[in-house]
Length: 77
Image (cartoon, rainbow, N blue to C red; front, side, top):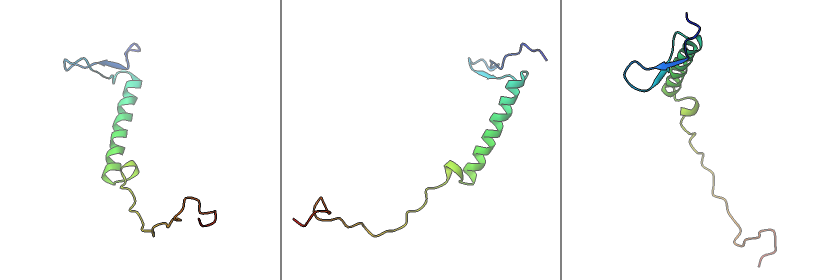
């Protein structure tokens, strides 16, 4: 293994994008971390858990009654 390998290298697909370099230990670690993160996100989406959980259904409560005047602590006008 060459110690001068960059973490990112240009894509061989003819685009100007950069990809992780598996010949560099940090690039290889980034490949595994990205793959693991993608698997965890797919599992969370499938199980509708975490940030993908549906919002809880609201519970019913009676409407709040308000005083007919703006300052309920004062005497009735």
